Length: 225
Image (cartoon, rainbow, N blue to C red; front, side):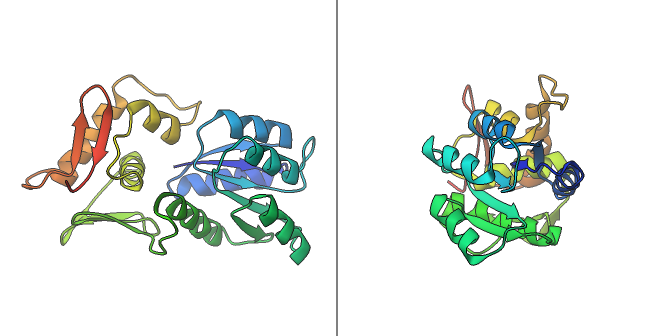
């Protein structure tokens, strides 16, 4: 899943980006409000982590313009302003969550996972995704089918997580590329098909019930149908 971080403290922004990428996310960084707004409105992101005290446009202004555009992308406000009034203002403008500085990166990760679940499944509390007998733990970054643990590489995990968050829907190849790769990443032409082939071997190999399907000319789907 792709996270947009809008943070003008460059050292903190880089730390957040590196920390989230270690946790299996794809992350991009904007260092002022104008850049953050442009990226939020023009790039496919799954969650926005938005500071309030930004140059050029404040986080309040960025959030308001995002919501005015009709976008319902989950937004987590990340800021040193932690008064009740500030929190109420953020929620009134359409924020989905609020995390005051300083914070533990583990709490940020859990809150992002919660926002992803809420966006896809209407707020179901569990961070375990299930399709048939396939389970994926978003906290532990582990997968299993039945009683068998499935070993996944980082990008394989990211693809499987995205498919499971969108279970029952055909996900186009272009959507996977947009949400799971940064602009700076090298993306060779057959990379998606290669990863799907490896994931299918690990998830469906030797099993009668196949969960991962290729819909020719459209994309990929994971379902228990």
